[in-house]
Image 1: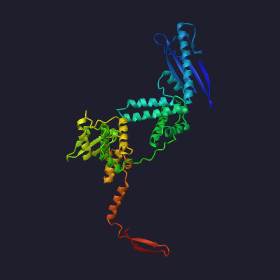
Image 2: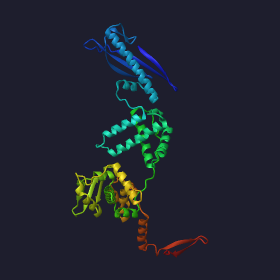
Image 3: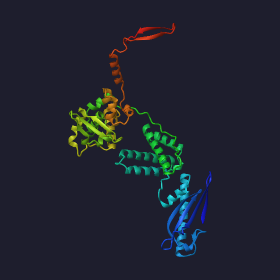
Length: 433
């Protein structure tokens, strides 16, 4: 017998029925049959098997229950009542969370398989837990920590601005997105690049929810976080010279300064500098020393010839090695703090990533190294990325134009000039300014 329940929806009426039955053609050796359940929603149905055994002799197919007061009948009917109540509870919970319901979703909820988070922060935690398991395999810890920061910002926003511990996925709309962006820009005072990063991850969560079937459509599919134009962040050449020639007293700051200079002359990012091994440094047949390392961020091979200054720094810290790493690099947070402190000592803002920009601009491109070569040394996958790092300075432009002028090209070429009053053409010699 079907237990029919009609659920009223503001848009349409859904039919919901639960049917219990046994398959008399599959009687076990002990003479019992398995109790089966069929959930029907809007003409779609899913079968749920149970661990309850039924004596076919006491089964009433019209009622969908067992007759009598035998021990087996009491057990079967109690199981039917409990499962009916559980199914109804899952129906209401899923319908309220997702805004829609299917028989398969109810079945999965009953069986405890394939259950996916129905709220935003729970979905984010699931994502981060899966990501953490892949760290060291095909993901890096720095990216995992970045996702954790995004989670903290989002959870703080939900708690402080929405007054809730979590929000359902179905409640996500444009207002939520816009409010989160304002929160990041004002309450958290984040830079445009960081705002873009956190908004992008919110979008990634809704895409994940759609793929899991917990959202029917992506509410943010047409939204594209504004990506700020990337610019080179190299130091002024005068500031770089000051940093290289002015000593500091604190040993930790001395080390960070030396690492900054090393990165300026090699283009290595913090993550690559931290993992730099003695095995990554080799000597060529002509006696020159080279770094050959796969960048942690892109896994692209970076080949850099070592000049005198980075070789001196390697030698300076050789005695402090405790393993195969060239340098004993501090942890990221402590390293960032020391870099900022170093900048205050010298009187200008300083971030370690500026060293990589210095390499692309001052050490290579400005000294005439072709951009294709710079791209290979920096381990970029695209020349367009190298163009961001290798900024052409005004000094470089001025020097190139002086060389062009020295060739004498254009000094003796006659230009054709048209007299607009007579429509006649006359020639004049170009004049050197």
